[in-house]
Length: 102
Image 1 (cartoon, rainbow, N blue to C red):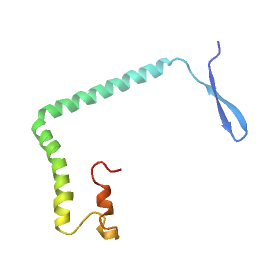
Image 2: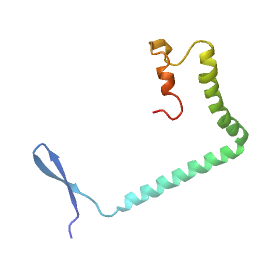
Image 3: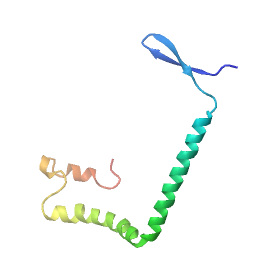
Image 4: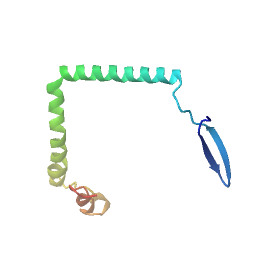
C-alpha cells in the first residue's frame, strides 16, 4: 500500500509533493517526549514559584484591571487627555473603547 501524497499547484502545472508519512518515526517520538518533559518541568517550576509568591500574584491580578479603569475612566478625562482627542476625532475613539463595542 503506497503512502498518500499531496499535490502542489504552481500556476497551471500540478507537481507531486513528498509523500505524507502515516506514522511517526522513532526520532519524532523521542523529540515529542523530550518536549513534553520540558513543558512539564517548566510548568512545575512556575507552580512552585506561584505557590511561594501567591499574595503578590493575587495583589497584581486584582490591581491591574482596577488601575486600568482608574487611569482611562477617571484620570485622563480629568486632566483633559481624552482618548482620541488629539487627532480631532473627539470622543469617537472613546466610544469605540466602551464595553460591548467592536
